[in-house]
Amino acid sequence: MLQYHFNWKTLSVIAGITLWNFYFRLYPGAIRAPQVVAFLKHLLRHIPGKLLLVWDRLPAHRSRMVQEFVAAQKGRICVEYLPAYAPELNPTEYIWGHAKHHKLPNACPKDFAELKHGARHALRNMRRRPTLITAFWKQASLWPE
Image (cartoon, helix red, strand yellow):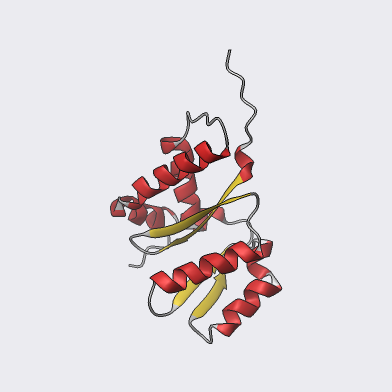
């Protein structure tokens, strides 16, 4: 008999996606403003030039802390918001869908550390497939013509 008392909702992922790659961080619990700012700092270190952030309407994205951080970047970060209730326009939603349905559907981790390791491994493997990343953009109908 298999007993399973683990809740998948205890692991959150934040990601940024370019046309051919994506960046991600895993966090325990919900994504809040401090995690968003930490992730933005990570992106700024790894991606030169200006960043266009296309965000959903997560409260952390609209928080004072995040807005002040973005403003302090003096134009290096520009923010646009997706329409409300439009996850189909967000290419990162396709990353999660692919990971959940193709990479982790039968995962039964014993604890949080095992879940985090499996999710990180699956996402890193997906990152090595630029044609898959391109497909997520095309699914979201945001691919530039």
